[in-house]
Image (cartoon, rainbow, N blue to C red; front, side):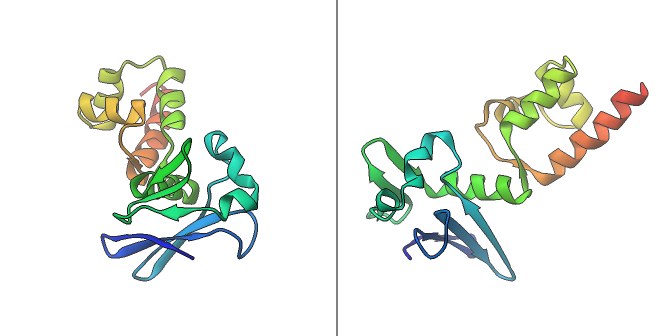
Length: 148
């Protein structure tokens, strides 16, 4: 199992065939997250374990490479693992929440107590959305439904 990266007191390791489906682990001091990567439409070809087993770790140790069309960086793997484990909110879910309430980026920022720029990053999927923001969306949802 290749270790993709070690940073921020954790490591990202790839498990191509120890148990299905192909997945990776993020491990830190006292915590671990297991995340499947073949469920993503972009990565669908990796459901074939023969292709998944061809993984190569880039020389810098921060990227996985299968084919010219399939490469993953450590930050992207980190983000997917956090989303799959519930520690981060997927951008699509955040965007659905905002649009369901017909909010502009500025309105969402005001309701959540964030800057418009931060909300724009989250909405575009440019930055990982922390669990605290997901929880703030749930709280805001309740307030919006009650008319407060």
